[in-house]
Length: 280
Image (tube, rainbow, N blue to C red):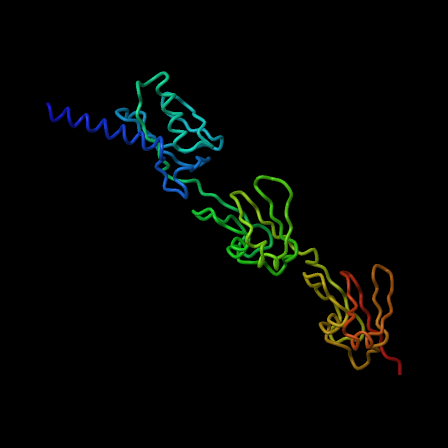
């Protein structure tokens, strides 16, 4: 009997110490145990000393609430583990238990994500590292980089917290922009180039007359377009090249433009380039 009493007293002492430890230092193996805040989809475990029917594992709902025996739904989202344990203890002590002793732990942490969508090779959700450190450059690398149809100058960052959408270029993420830290729920949107599906047409005395795909970069000059169309034929008149732009006809000296080099004539989508035939 004496041994049993000592053993029971020791057990009560251990539970008391455990309760104090949970109240002051939550048993959380997360990035920061002392300050971890409970979030929706966290799975928590409640253990109540000498009350096995009250012990359970429960997932926190999107509303931030979790349901417990007798006391029902309790709003624990946004509380630290210690604060949530104290709140639950107070509710049990109020109407059901005398000096309840309990522990509250996190069994499974909700996975946090950022999204990279649009014209990337592997669009979708990217899990946040346990450390919580993820920047734009790393997220873009994880998404496999841009597709051929992406606009490298129109990448957008939409914060989960709302506010203005930031726009940046692919080249800028190699600098300070790439080190911008992301938070759970942030979205990176990679827009498709406005020039996808656009063409110019090269007709007349060229090697391969017909439509040409407009570059997604949005930059195509006359010399490059004629080169892509197979170059001038022997019958071409290089001094008489016309551009039909929405009904307006522009007459150009292709020979002078190609020799000049430093002042290219830039084409626009739907331009029709016609190389005239030489008259003998």
